[in-house]
Amino acid sequence: MLNKTTRRQFTNYAQEYYTAKEQEDTERTQEIVKEWGFDTLGGDCIGSGSGRVVFDLDICGHPDLCVKIAIPHPQWDGQQQNSREVSIWNTVSEIQRDYLVEVVESGPDNYWMVMKKGQSIDNLPYNWLQDAKYHLREIVWKKDISEDNIVKIDGKYKFCDYGVSPQ
Image 1 (cartoon, rainbow, N blue to C red):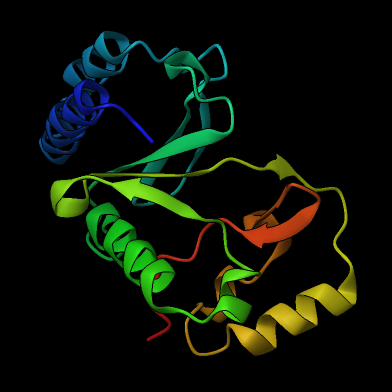
Image 2: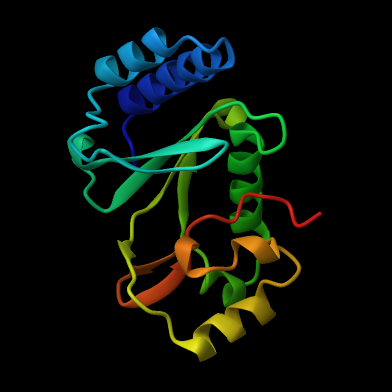
């Protein structure tokens, strides 16, 4: 989906970003985001958690995609979360995939991964949530099964954050 140049840039910037975060070099992390072309104040940053920051890929000509960039964290490391989401996506059943946002591609060492981008939801049908909890019970951490981690893509509800291990 992404061209070779974009993949190479993602890999370079994501590795540098991770290292700068690890060294708590705020100035360098801001420089990297600026070099990359993302405007965190202008809405390109569409989410973040303890181990990852998520950017909209509109600026790269992909309005339906986002990229999750790994950041270090002692308990919820972003590389591990990206690796887990890629692995889950590649190994789950078709029924389980119906409840998960698609992983489009990922970089070496899981410093970055690209997923489909969804729209925020206002309210979630109770039956859908219960069905999702049942089908994903062995792969998604119970704490992550919440409306905060669900988006709508092509009219369907999907979990967008399933990288934390249930253990």
